[in-house]
Picture (cartoon, each protein chain N blue to C red):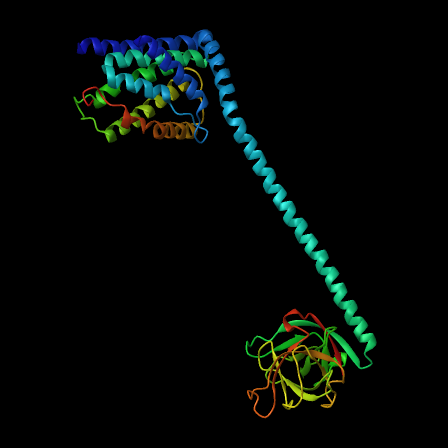
Length: 260
Length: 151
């Protein structure tokens, strides 16, 4: 048996070598047509079956690709629309500011807010106008909504605006309806306090507060805010405790008009 | 019935081999089939079945007849030698190593035969890469193809 096995092994080797040697000299032996016809047919059938399975996935892939493209296009368009909207809003703000500047006789310059104080506990903003634009210390800053604050620090090209809400801010004001005078003081939050209003004075939430001009810093008649809360049960000591919400939200300010 | 099953298996192998491709390389399924024949039916039948499969593959390729005949014949012959229990005791790992090794041998025989008797089928580096990749692809089959005495 081992002999037969060895014999067969060498027979296969020899046959292979003979075949290959023959073909290397005389050319290939023509063969395989039947196999190829059969395999070709089978491959066609398999290809059809495979395509039938693949087609939905190919479509899905194409849709996915289209989806990604369209999403990108939507993002671009939204970005573009955002830019246009921003331009429209800026235009609106600047127009209002321009009107305010024209109506105000004491206008010095309009300024853009370019920074916020990095210290969390102070409420100041950095403006892009300074001494070279005529801005000086203690000048008032207003917006179309109302009083924004006052200039505390000025350099050649920049200035700092102290907001109403800062604890160091104070302004002489009066209640528009009752004409009663008081002092508006910031307390470090969004809400300011109206001080020195006696108990006998009737103050109600919603009353408008305007500058009185008596401090010689802010021109009279600039809207400041409205009364949001009145407590006349002794919380304010000898005077009423009154809270005022400024008309101008400092987090939404972008430009101010500086007046003297 | 047995012959019919083998014929169907051979044809299916040819069809699959033409369609499956991993990293651009088709697995050497005909070598796996020859390995199976050798493992299950012994070296003589393995040699014969392997040679027939190889001859068919050569015929289909419409080129030199002989390289695959010799290569697959060798796979069929030596697969039995590897794992029949005479020299080595079959384990799944040995099965994997054996099939990977024999696939490499088959590819080497085909490459050398074609290079000697016809023309070099590809650059040697590329040939080596193909041989190694086909060995890796064939290796898992070694776990499942067991000799009869293990069953």
